[in-house]
Length: 263
Image (tube, rainbow, N blue to C red; front, side, top):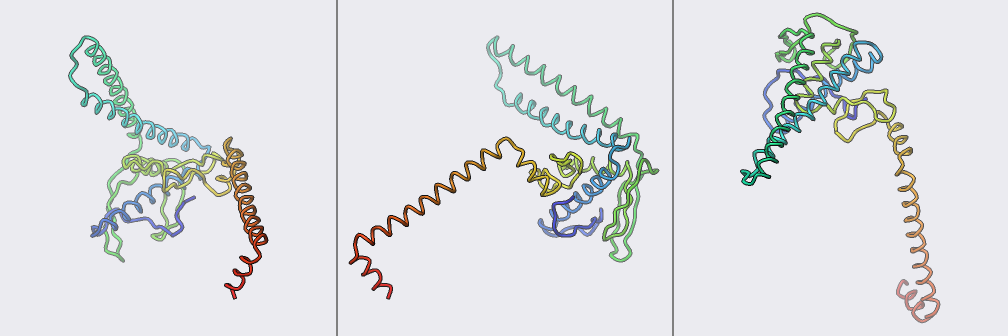
């Protein structure tokens, strides 16, 4: 389920070069949306099947690799900013940090290589197509042969077939652009995959969103605090009105002057 309200079509992979920054960003978002939609539709249609579990494992590893890469980069930046150790204690601490950073980088390298080995089982070949109406060429990688269950997505451009290899390629492109969060499992029902345009979008429907917050431990505390604040504000408003009325009643000449002023 997508968060966009307007209809978004699949974008040609090769099209006239955008002339403005806004147009370029719109093109990028549309391409990412196309990949996210292909992956989401395929995952929702194949839930529970062996192919689903394979693709799910790849998505999980892609997400963890992204986090591991961030940690390796942070360790390298920290080491580069450190001053040259001078005392024995500083030398010993720097040596330990350097050893830990090296082990972290080696672990990342091994996981990275394992991921490429896993992706090697999905053979792709380059393909070039042309849209005769628009005159736009489209170049991309398509599976050499169909693998796993296949689903068909109806779009403005026509019917698009998505199989296991296509879903994996879409997830890899999203991960490379740090947009893997756009393919997300609903955090409430844990059943429905959805397109998440923003990192903060976590639920597949309004019902799941409300159910999640209603069952949150902090929900009842926030609701009680909100009700207390409402009652206090209401009481303060009633008291202020009562005081104003009593003031006019205690001073009839002032109240009469106010009425004459209104007249």
